[in-house]
Each structure stands twice: as structure tokens, then as C-alpha cells.
Length: 190
Image 1 (cartoon, rainbow, N blue to C red):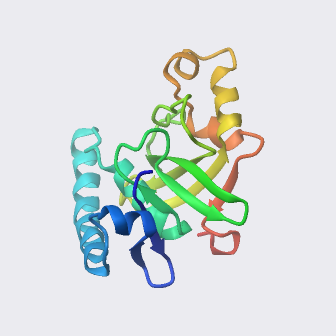
Image 2: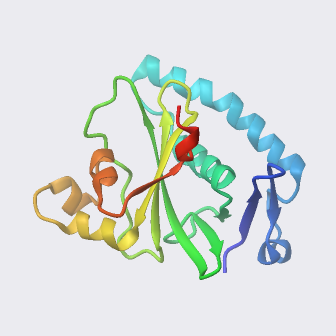
């Protein structure tokens, strides 16, 4: 089983789970977590500026989305390139395996902006959409939907991008019957 990292929201630190402690990992202590935060704080404005200048993404949105989702939602991040999922949420009914899709979103973006490819044969229970402000790459919203419902929508006739590429638009994701806003909490909406 891949190493998992538990991000503790209360202390804003990442702690290794039992499997991680045995296998070793790069985010074992609070110093490394703090350094990752520093790196992301430096990268975000550079990536946003790069996009403003070139209209091309720098390619860090996914990593930022995963880290932000883990911190805000208390998820355990899987090792890089773990097949099928990016994080795990532990609950009373057992683990929930999550594919995280990050998107820079906001003013001036195309209305049909698409998520990255959803892996159909993944070991996954939920897809989490993390929308980051396209000017700052700070989190705006996080939505989640059951993996099976996302796959059913991808298979529905009518869109080559959906059917062949496994790409769902942001509005289509939000319209899924079971899609729900998970962050910010309803009373914390800006």
C-alpha cells in the first residue's frame, strides 16, 4: 500500500500514518510541511503571473489543489503517481479514495472550462474538484461527487470531449445530481 500523509488541520501539520512511518517519506515533520507551504506561497504568484503574461498554465495547479484540499479537508495524501487516487478520507465506514482535480477558475475563463482526465478504471470512490482563483491560485471552492456518477456522466452521449477524453466541464461537474459543495463551509462563503 502506498504511503499516506495525514494533514492535521488543527495544528496545520502533516503527520505520517503508520504505513508512512514504516516506509519513510518527505513530509514527516512540521518543518517539511512549513517548507512546502513556503514553496507554494512563492510559486502561486509566479504561476499566476506566468498565466497572465502567456495565457499558458505553469503546471502546478494540480499540486497546489492536492495540498490545499488535504489541509482544508483533513485528507491523507497518497504518494505521487499512486494509480487511481490522490488522497484518502478516513471515516467510520472505512477509507474513501479520492481523485482530486484542480482548476484555476475565475474572471475571464472560458465558461466550458474542463477538468483534467478522469481515470475510468481507477480505485476511487469520489472525485473532488478544487477551484482555485485564477489570479492568486488561492482556493475558492471545493466540490465533490461520487465517482460512479461522474463516470455515468462521462459515458452519456453528446460530447466527444466527455466520451473520448474523459473530460468533464466545471459546470457539468457542479450540475451532477449528487455533487455538493464541501468547502468553504456554507457559513464561511465569501
